[in-house]
Image (cartoon, rainbow, N blue to C red; front, side, top):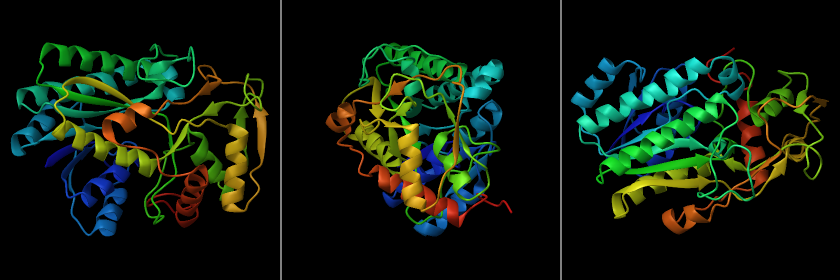
Length: 340
């Protein structure tokens, strides 16, 4: 199968490319390298011994994208490409709506024009907003607390309407919880631009002395220790979720818009994550309690049973695995890809 992977040089994209090559998919990566690295794909090629066709391009460049669709015959698309920093989205909402929503519309128009109607979309647990009850199921009410989350929810509405308009479409929207960790080899991992927006890469950078301490945003939430609780999932498990989703699109008769949570069903607090990473790295992680951030919620974790029932997928890695693999990547690549 010939698969177009938008944003395939990013953190989740590169790990998914590795797993897809292991399953003998032929992949073409389309990425603008704005928050990703070509080095990640080179390392995937080295680890797998297989080649990846790479095209540098932006989804907002519809002429370039049209060229790609004319030159290749795709069986399906995995759509990762998008901006993803919650804080930045609050500061620059128009940038997020233009990039994430307009970029996706361009992609969908060309898929429709070229009769490519199988899609795995990279969605997010942010589409659930402030949870009314836990764990979150695929039928939980949707709402958002920031423009990043709203951009993902708007895209889900677009995909639902598209699937209703034409029964040939088969669309799986994978709602990720909190991906962390890295490939077991320590060769590919998370390499954020600038100051990390997510907890684990920040903890990792403190562990290798790139940063002084972790800011814990609030310790007065109604949770086990007052700090925010999230469902952390190993990035390799997440990557495998995409492989299972592709197989489901090919083998199943189910059509339309299919939302699926990818999480473990377990919630860990910020302080528990710091302790777990201290154990994995055998270092002390200094932290300080600071004010809550706007848009943050107290607790969020998945009911992952739908992924198991539909796809046969279940997270395999423990919290210890996640922290150990994240540390292995960070100590081998203290400043990330191509940074000295």
